[in-house]
Amino acid sequence: MAVAVKGDRMPTAATSAPSSYFAQLAAERPDIALCRASTLVARAAEEHAVEQRLGVGQQLVLKMLAAVGPCSQQTLSEELRIDRSVMVNVADELERSGLVRRERNPNDRRAYAVTITEAGRTRLAAAETAMPEFLDRTFANLTAAERRQLTAILGKLLEIR
Image (cartoon, rainbow, N blue to C red; front, side):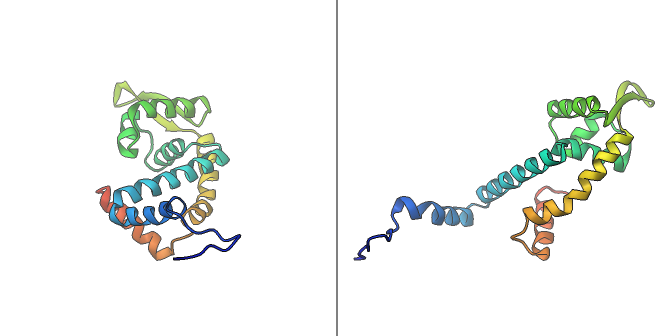
């Protein structure tokens, strides 16, 4: 039987179980570990977005528009895997900020194409410049090889590789 010395705290089930239990749980349940990791990364991304004055979804939309040209909101929603109702709000905010404009689609007059503006390109360039430092900070516990491996595994899970 261990004896506690004054000033020393003996670990109790209440103080030692959560950290050791979560490690065990994460090893047994990769779904739980991935959900918790996703939450941590999402929080970091949102904090970074506030610093950049550009939401995560907004940056993704601008990035896609800069890469592929004008798109419908439906295409943006499907390709970026952003819920359609959320995409409406993202596009509305980007338009209000002057970072995109909506124009009639010349191939389908019933539809609109979302187009990045010069102001949008400028804001995107600033956000992209800050991205490597954000990624390095967020994934600091991983080596470069582990980051590449994680990216490959996530691509496989998402069926994009």
